[in-house]
Image (cartoon, rainbow, N blue to C red; front, side, top):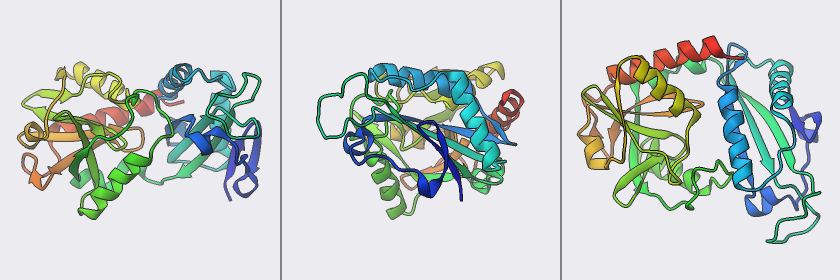
Length: 285
């Protein structure tokens, strides 16, 4: 049985209880982060901690602990659960004042903080990455502040199910004719030596893996354009891929039934995955 962390205590998962009045449960009033673990070490923890702080600030939510203490909790859970490859999930909600109300509770109400691990052996050696994934396009019907990493994940979950029903692996969301992002990842296309991905704004999440991959791409002398693109442009691209904390760099080989390039993982995505894993593991904590 896993050990989880809840409001200052390490507990067997079956013993961890949260109030039915918690605003994360009633209002989706919470934020989260997912940090990958490779070789028993945390990948890009600092990036996740910085984004967590921003999300909390955007929602005027109090942080329950300092960054250094949060790091120690992550490390302790990895140790107790003997995680070699996997992830640490963190969620902070505005807590519970013992009833349901649309108005925020008073500031003296303690936030709820939960962390747990998931073991995923061989995550970096994904067989899926060697063959690539297929995606469909769907309308983006989420709320307007996607730059905040909230727990409002119902529509992305619906998108995953739409993709599954269509015999695909994931979905890219489209708004005003342009791709925003995947259901749980940032989206990219490659044309020639140019990597194209949507510019940052309220419409998409500023991915931690996205930031690292774009930096590595520029260091490798690849050209990067941060702009909108359409599904039609993506279908005519040489390559496509997505990035996230748990899939790293994942090639996309088909969009809405149309093969991308040769229909196999391309050289750019393959090389970026190698660079990302190599450099991130060097810097892991």
